[in-house]
Amino acid sequence: MAHAVDVLTSERPVQRQGRIKTTGYAAHSSTSSLQPFSFERRKPRPQDVQIDILYCGVCHSDLHTARNEWTNTTYPVVPGHEIIGRVVKTGAQVRRFKEGDLAAVGCMVDSDRTCASCQAGLEQFCESVPTFTYNSEDKHLGGMTYGGYSKTIVVDEAFVLRPPANLDLAGAAPLLCAGITTYSPLRRWKVQKGQKVGIVGLGGLGHMGVKLANAFGAHVALFTTSAHKTADAKRLGAHEVVVSKDPVQMEKHLNSFDFILDTVSAQHDINSYLNLLKRDGTLVLVGAPEKPLPLAASSIILPRRQLAGSLIGGLAETQEMLDFCGQHGITADIEIIPIQKINEAYERMLRSDVKYRFVIDMASLK
Ligand code: NAP
Ligand code: ZN
Image 1 (cartoon, protein in one colour):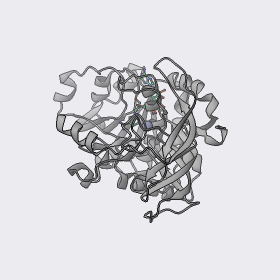
Image 2 (image 1 turned 90 degrees about the horizontal axis):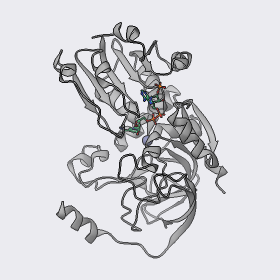
Image 3 (image 1 turned 180 degrees about the vertical axis):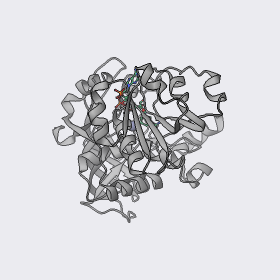
């Protein structure tokens, strides 16, 4: 650990010259609302792309971080990691993007690119810790990285993705986190036709999970605490809907699922979902509640069930997911908000009142 810290501090060139002034919305403490905030980005280096942000999705991770629910937040924090924008400047070495191109940035803006995870295309598990889009150490300017609730962002070309040209831009923004976070485990556990797949929670991640599992050909059951979401879930691609508060409905599905993806952001009973898996079935947690979730050993011992987790996806897989969504015409179902409504949007997200992702129209940020 000491070694890692030494490397970070000795290799960190703090760029003092040539900064770009910009504005965004930041939280200054775990209890304060998000407010307008002025800050600086680095000027593009030869390998950098500067992107003026058009749309940024609102992920529940933004809320967990703004309120320090994972106890790792450095303030002020500018959340936002579902970014779609237009390239306004490129450094001399940039090859894949030119001024005027559409560009996308997800949850990471850098990694060491040399460790075994990076070499395997799993930059999210970079052994030197990836630089996340916000609330990560900024190795260029010092301080912390600031995310997409802002006018402009400067990112190394290697971490900039290309959104498919045929997709609605605002609806494509949530693919950069909600899309890849559900796509990656569905792919890794080879979800396919002939399988019975459950998605738990119909929020930002969950509704993408329903769309993608359906596109992969699975029989999809959506578990919800909100009975009124049933018709929407079916429209989005669920073949059946289970109201998880109803034990009779839950009991009908005991020992029957090949795979379940749990996207719930708050405390809930994972054992009741594990019990729905058949032998060797897998439940993957992507939701990240702030407190530990109790696990009964019997839920996985019998009959040899598996409990796993998954974190976003690597760069190549994120581009693969974007291309897949382009080919299948898949975007998020969104409600566009001006940035001034972000605090209200967080309250609504906590009440599960999202259909099914808020996306900030950055033109509202003056
Ligand atoms: P979201 O839009 O708020 O959706 C969460 C859904 O969970 C809600 O819509 C609700 O669905 C259900 N839910 C909420 N409270 C519940 C409770 N007390 N009991 C049971 N169900 C409840 O959030 P999101 O943006 O999809 O994010 C979901 C979680 O994934 C968050 O914890 C987020 O931090 C995490 N996340 C993880 C990764 C990763 O890489 N692993 C990436 C992004 C986000 P119903 O109304 O249908 O029940
Ligand atoms: Zn996210």
